[in-house]
Amino acid sequence: MPALLDDVRFAFQPLFNLNTGGVVAVEALARPRDGSVQDLLQAAFQAGLLTNADVGLACRAVRSAADFDLMLPLHVNLLAITVADRPDVLSPLYGALRDARRSPDSIVIEVGEPYSRANRARLARGLKTLRNNGFRVALDCVGEGDVPLGLLTSAAPDFIKLDREIVRTLPDDAARCALVRSLVHLGEYTGGQVVAEGVETEAQLTYLRKLGVGHAQGNMLAPPQRRPAVNARIAPEAVTETGEIRRNAGPRVTDFLHPATTLPEHATSEEVREVLASQPTVTGVVLVDDEGRPKWSVDRNRFLLAVTGPYGHALHAKREAARLADKPHIIGTEASALDLLDVVAHANRERTNDDLIVVDHNERCMGVVRVADVVRGVAELKVEQAAALSPLTRLPGSDALAKEVDRRIEVGEIFAVSWLDVDSFKQVNDTVGFAAGDDLIREIGHDLADLANAFPGVQVGHVGGDDFLILAGLDETVPLSARLLDKPYTAEGRHITLSLATLICAAGSVGSYREVSRLLAPVKEHAKSLAGSSWVMGRPGSERRDVLRGVAQRAVS
Image (tube, rainbow, N blue to C red; front, side):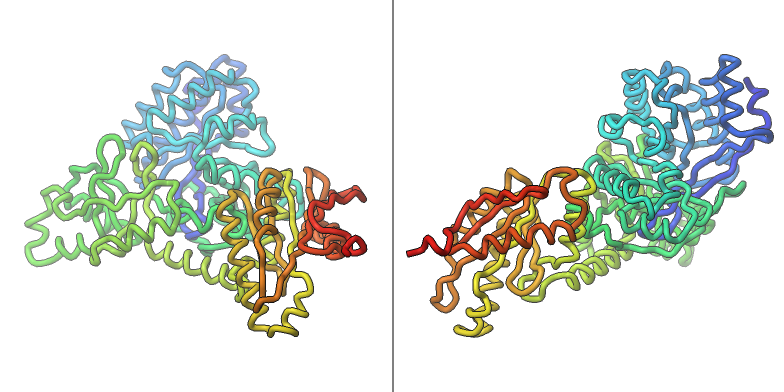
């Protein structure tokens, strides 16, 4: 088996955070002298040594990275059938980590196809063992490979890696765009970061950002190189259109994650100084215990001020750096950027610019977040959101609602779209004045916002004048609409009625927001023809309309 691996070298390709523009990890890619990795593994399979060769490549990847003293997380590849094998098969990998002085939590195991040849139960146990031993996990080849869909939820991978064939067709293939959007949405619930492989064009990169993909690698960004390009950068984009795609308000702290520079908690001041001197872009060092849990945070500026002052080196060099450190500011991976700013707001004044350390559910260090990145990102998000809001009601406008309707269509949700307006609103303005009309619109907007808060999954928008849109699930539509129409509205004592038109959209029944608006128009016209506050419900492809409220004009005495 060693003979198979003798001529294998490694190249390293950076993974970029698309929000910050910086390198957050590197992937080790095997480069045999002759043929491809697949050829090598096929030869190992024929010799009955596939698992051994696979683990051997991972070990060589770790040792090759050690030649460059990488402080970044390292992605190494293992086949799904290797992970599903006996636990002792991976013993050499732990030896390689010891030799390279790396901890498992600095390694991301990229599990690759074929998945269909791996026993599902053993694969699940293998993934759990990796996690329990400190490794992070990525599922590779998602979209084109044979990754079981159930594994994306049951394994809750730290990273979901889009196959390059999916990325290659963006943004022209609408179905694959919908697939990527769905995976991003899934990752929001499972805590997984979506990584795009094989990014080759600006159009792909722009659209991936639009879809909410947070990490990417590809030759356009930085090709694989013998010496890792850890200082490479791309143009950052702290906030893209993802704020409109996501259901949760604002970005998560993991969108701004930088790799943590770590040392053991008992490291000396001289060891910390050497790291800071060799890496001028590092803003601080995290001192961690044997389990990778942060114990101390060393801020670059305060530390260097102490050790470079008069007698600083003599006083501190050989002593533990913890003497010049602070208790770390810690935040979980599920926290939002606004949660982070709340932590900063309650910090001591001299520490408001300190990096925050992001930890997983086992309190292990996952990386750091720089306050300046988050402040910039949240500010840009707020400006973008404010520009999209109605100045009268502070509700989102038609663009935001259009994106959400299209998202629900693409993922195959069943939902209802309701169009609400005020009957004879021009007469309200003409008789009691436009100020009273504005007050009425504000009141309806406020009530809709309250209803959206009361019913999870409901989104509302003010699309112009006296027109509002409501997006809801089927279970929410009836109680929400009833509460809205039951309330009496007046403008300067004048009784006001409302018209509500609802379209029930089953999966595949509509193709776009534009089609929804067109199909709603005759339903709304029907509702407007009724006396009193009215509600009419229709369905795409059917002429039938159900009158749930309102009376035909001719029936009014």
